[in-house]
Image 1 (tube, rainbow, N blue to C red):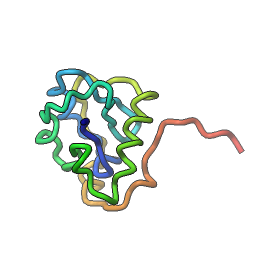
Image 2: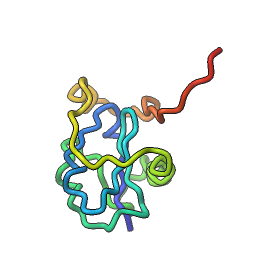
Image 3: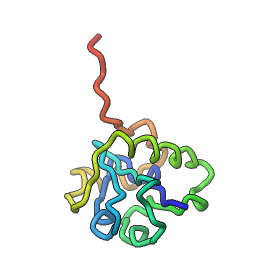
Amino acid sequence: MTYVVTESCIKCKHTDCVDVCPTDAFREGPNFLAIDPDECIDCTLCVPECPVEAIFAEDDVPKPQREFIALNAELSRIWPPIVETKAALPDADEWAKVKDKRAELDRGEKKAAA
């Protein structure tokens, strides 16, 4: 089993969880973190560190957010590891209260010019 970062992290990106991860399983995108399921050892250390309660055991991911299981696996293959705590995004406190922000996820992909 692995742990999964869910929607609450979008546009917040607190990184307190990164420092406690013994396997450096976190990956960093522009406005979201993901956990590499191949690196996660199910230690649970990251869960209490998340101030927006965005991290769940794979079996406990809320049903409306189950897509984040596959999304973490996908994004962890393309995003670089993050191994040190960084400041949260500037407006993280405002975004922490927002629900249904899946559309705000920035994958970091370059958009083609129109």
